[in-house]
Amino acid sequence: MSTISVPISSKLEESINNLIESGYGSNKADVVRRAITRLAEEEAVQIVLRAMEEPTLRGNLRELAKKLR
Image (cartoon, rainbow, N blue to C red):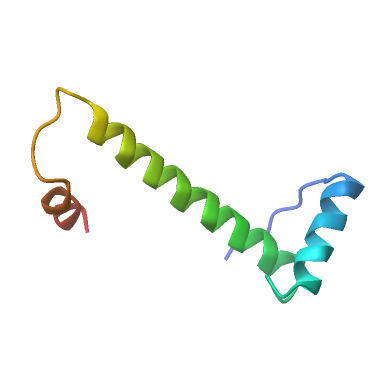
């Protein structure tokens, strides 16, 4: 596992602390990891949704997803 150091504003740090207090994560690193994971998942969903709207693509997206696993 790698460690990175990223400067953040006091407002973002306050948001992270609020997320910890609300139970979203156990500490700052956990909150950031969860947020990045969630963002990556949302981006993947958006890519699939855009692909489904693409008229030149044909086929079963579920079958394609199985091949990519």
